[in-house]
Image (cartoon, rainbow, N blue to C red; front, side):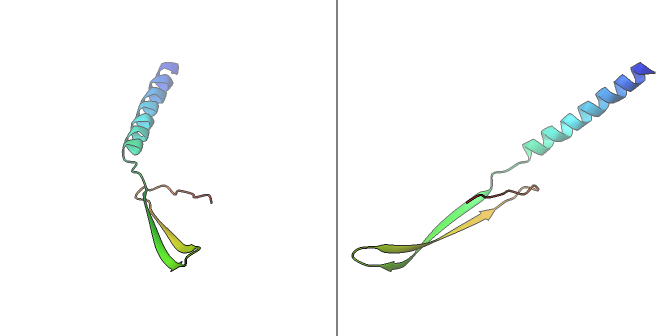
Length: 66
């Protein structure tokens, strides 16, 4: 009985490891785009408006900390 449980646990472990390996292989880097728009330029200063766009092609969420 113990041998059957050990074999079942090993098979379950191998299947879980294969799913984890395939999930890691499918991960992609998020696409980050930075756009700088010039709002105003004077002789002493330049005012820029930044826009950051993040596209995450993965199924898991990402969190940004500012």
